[in-house]
Image (cartoon, rainbow, N blue to C red; front, top):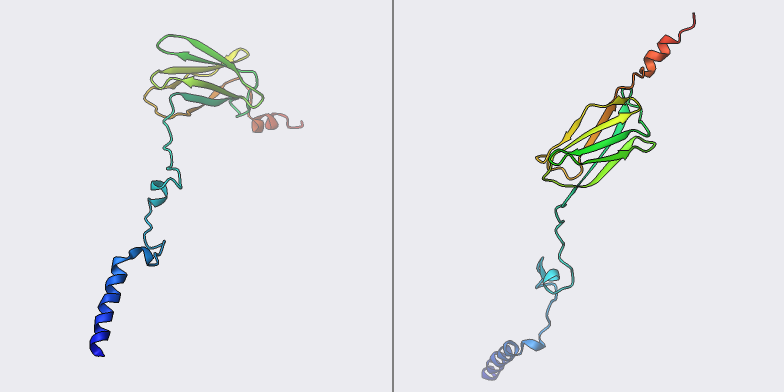
Length: 153
């Protein structure tokens, strides 16, 4: 009897090893971080493309920080001297789009008979969205100074 039992056990183990299709497979046992992307279940993340042009934005203010509506902002390409103008909106903001990264620009604002100092946007500044605040000295007095001037006598 003992011989039969020993002969049956090796045959049973051998048959289990030869027929792997009949074995239960644990689906979580063979997972890998990249399995989803490998089998098309998940799209691989796209890398963000580097911008091909830049957008310059900013605001025109007076010396008190008040936004100036209707100021003319002029952008000059320093290589070709080509000029582009933009009139500010109610909040004093302006925007120039599609600027070349490999060019230098100069920026200046004019409001009535007054103008701001010039500001530069350099080709060596790699920022895709540079911001420039232009201050126009209109001769306006700060709010605290004008309140002091209106003291009752």
